[in-house]
Image (cartoon, rainbow, N blue to C red; front, side):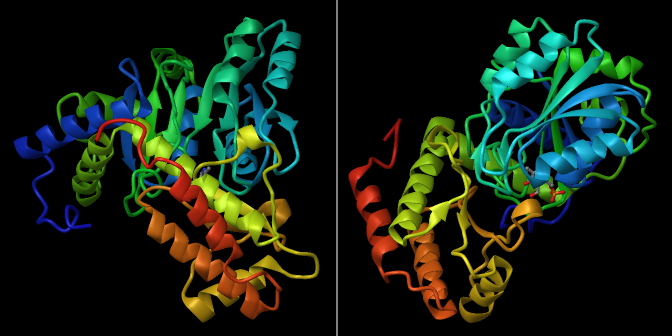
Amino acid sequence: MRAISQPLIDHRGPKFATLLREVLKGLRDVFQTTKGHVVLYPGSGTGAWEATIVNTLSPGDQVLGCVNGHFSALFCQTARAHGIEVDMIEVPYGVGIPADRVEERLHADKNHKIKAVLVVHNETSTGVTSNVAAIRHGMDRAKHPALLLVDAVSSLGSIDFRFDEWRVDVALTGPQKGLMLPPGMAILAVSEKALQASGSAQCPRSFWDWAPVLERNSRGEFPYTPATALIFGLKESLSMLAEEGLPNVFWRHARLAEACRRAVRAMGLELLAKNHQEHSSTLTAVCMPDGFDSDAFVAHAQKSLDLSLGIGLGQVKGKVFRVGHLGSLNELELLGSLAGVEMALRSFGIAVPIGAGLAAAESYLLETPAHVAGP
Ligand code: PLP
């Protein structure tokens, strides 16, 4: 926040060009790519969906949309809005995308009509992380040339995401989650293959056209007025991630997430995410006990304790509440939130044992090391 509140600089001047080069390099490190191109727009994650679709596809194209929650459904909806035919693999809320089903569908598509596979790495509505590496292997086994388009909005910068290794074609995110910034940007990493696809993609595009952005960025500027203050902040947040080291960042989130899940279970509540290996490191969706509405509970927590929890979205509206543990977060902040959850549940009329969740989280945190690398 302090970095953002500096006086602005001329976005066509030399200082800005140096700043832009630094943040583009830092973002490539966080996407874990040396080959990908980073594109920055003013916008949000929703804009990043649109940028991904309009730059790579044409109306009438067929894509394979992998849906396991609210945000993956909306990603597909963005494609449909541009005249793209979305063939879906749909699984219940609470589970990840099965790579073998992606492989099966692509294998059956002998004429390669499917132009892209759309996946959300971390479903923010359910607290489930899908295995993008396995999906890539499935695509390889099917020997299918479709583009791999991945929403990394609630994973990048908090959960291991490997753009080059998984051969992702477009990864998209926003600044307000793992990058720890206020909202206001759409951020893409783009492969050479996706750049080539954009040469023949026919979706109408103007603001979201990445060609002028890439061209002007290579000269240290933008084709329009960029979100300069956010770019100051981005430089700082990228330095913070680099100082901590990505392996430590990923471990910090994995560890805090496990502490949160243990707390939830000790409160006698159930997780929405079904499979241990798919549990999200950035948020936990908790099933509301029968007879209680989670929207009303979230409003109660806000009103009684000024505690912000996530509501249930899409098919689980009213049925789950979500605890966010992504981006800038430490042990005590998590424990404070968990204490708030216990108090709010009790005052809402749910008989959770006071302190049980906190004790489970504290014990786990005491038993596990805080760092994986460095001092
Ligand atoms: N994708 C995912 C996985 C999200 O969690 C969100 C928002 O939370 C979005 C896309 C949309 O991003 P935004 O709200 O920045 O438009």
